[in-house]
Image (tube, rainbow, N blue to C red; front, side, top):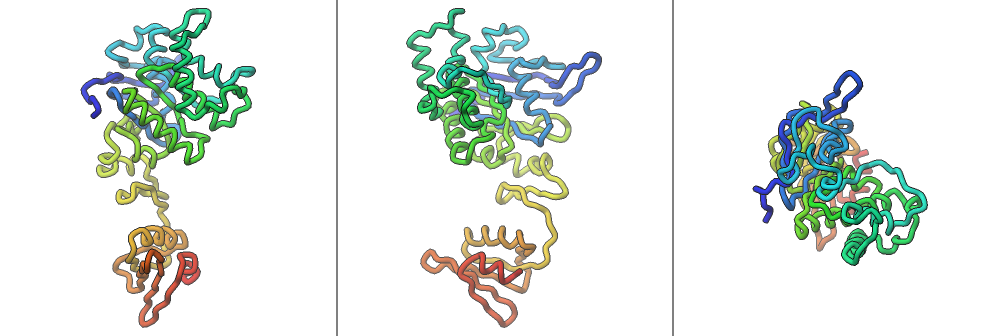
Length: 334
């Protein structure tokens, strides 16, 4: 069970943004955020809303415009670089690669806060590096030059470096970018394991709402007031905050499915019933061609399940038609 009373990171009236020569540009304000031990937090918001700026501020790369950040009860502004590097590891979205260095060496750089100036590793350091290679699935790439990796594998290598750094807090900016769907699931399971078994506190930014709904202990949702709403995913769905944050004239958020739908004009309505999974995917297909599902419509589609084989029956007035596939059903309505 999560220790909700032990906040490993928290902010007090934090204001994040940029300082120019003469002016300040505020991106996010009035932030009183908490991140507990063993908590996996997803940072969500529209493009350009300040996700990367906040992560850079939380790890000390950007100075706060106002307010304070506390790491394990220590004011971040009072921590030296070496102490901060033992508390927070960070993976940003930049793709700047060091030439002539292999994957093992890149991951080993995560151990720099714990080594002397000669950068010598003891057996414990080597064990940590090997573990980082193994848990991220990169053992087969250990000798490959870092500048020859695909974007997805390179991103995994940077996450492995953060794992090797072995800090209580890990910040990740768009960690699933450039990674295929199975790779995303593998990565999320790894992050979940790090929070559950290693008691890490992980904060990651993403656009992947579905992943957030499945894996997040808590979501930091950036709203239209340039602030952040902090809650569990289910509460944010039911209280309408997701729709407020992302909804536009062209799209709306469906609370029942937890997904966004394109708002469009429909040319026809149909009363859809029957097999639940079949009805869900049939409705999606019909919506795509301009047919809406409406329980009050006179024309009907009944989906029958005969020994795990679906059949679509269309009833219109006194006529009835049977179709063996959604594709053939769609041809009927086009």
